[in-house]
Length: 128
Image (tube, rainbow, N blue to C red; front, side, top):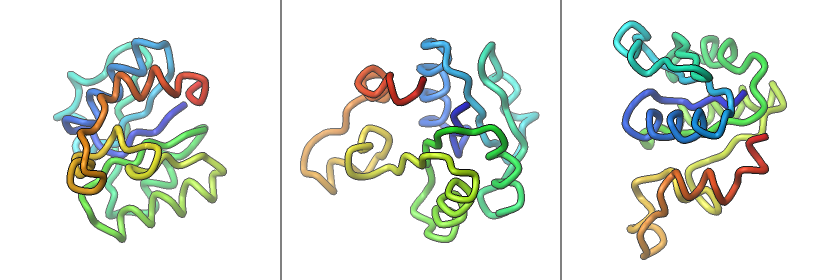
C-alpha cells in the first residue's frame, strides 16, 4: 500500500497512474465525500488531515511507501515523515530523485519536471 498525502491534482494523477499498475493506493482527503469520485479499484480514499498527526498515523496503517505531496508547510511535511518513520514506511519526498512529484522543480533544478507517469515507470520496482 502506498499513501498519497493529498487528493488534489497531483494526488489524483498519482493514484490513477499507480492504480493502472495494479499498485494499491490510499489517498488522504480532508473531506472524503468530496473525493468520492476518486475512488476506483485499488484506490482507497481515507479521511485525514495533514494538520492532524493522529489521522496521518491512522492513514499509515499497512503502508509501505509514501508519496509526500503538500504545499510548503513544514509542520505537515514533518508530521508525515515522522509518521512514516514510526510506521517504517519509505517516505518519497518531493525533492531530489523524486522531483517528478513537485511543481517547484523548474525553479529548484532549472529544468522541467518529469511526469508522474514517467516517475511510476522509472520506479515501478519500488512500488511493488
